Image 1 (cartoon, rainbow, N blue to C red):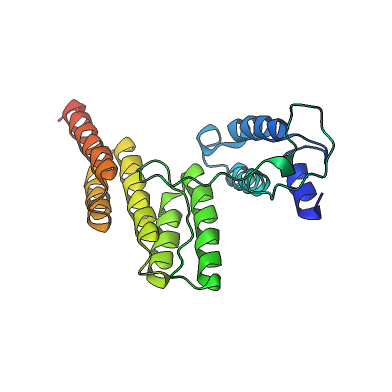
Image 2 (image 1 turned 60 degrees about the vertical axis):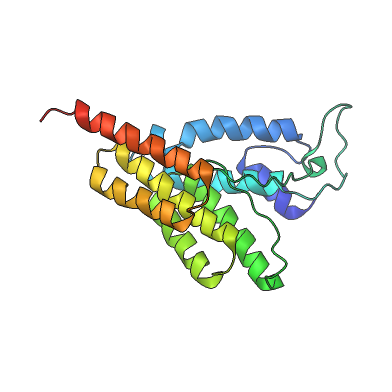
Length: 206
């Protein structure tokens, strides 16, 4: 097993012979323990959450090379093939190869995607927006990056609604629609967010 994978397993508290199911179980346990919602204002917990999420992503994306001997019926970490899905939704994004990009730009896109997922899970939406805005400037002709940009603003808007910042939320949601105006699922999500915002605003005492 490659040294990097061994190191990532250690981050999750696992040994080199861990199965893919072990990885998922350990990640779920640690993610619950260190999630920002459970550790409000604790920067160390936030950093730990990001690190274990990064480790999990590396292990999930590991190349399918059989090295570790595991019981019949189970998959080792390196047997788990990465599954690439392409779904145009406001809640789930996935990366695809753009033949118009140079190899370096494709690597940049993949790294940007990985970082964006970590920031989404940690609910660090301003940093996610800064990341994807910069990526959109570099890869201006990549429609998938523009989609990620819209998703980042939509999630930021939803987060602002939860915290009662309705004016900022409205601006973020409108920008999401401008960035990806033909995404029907995004429109549905944003319309749902606007209805929720109107409902919560009516419930607040005048």
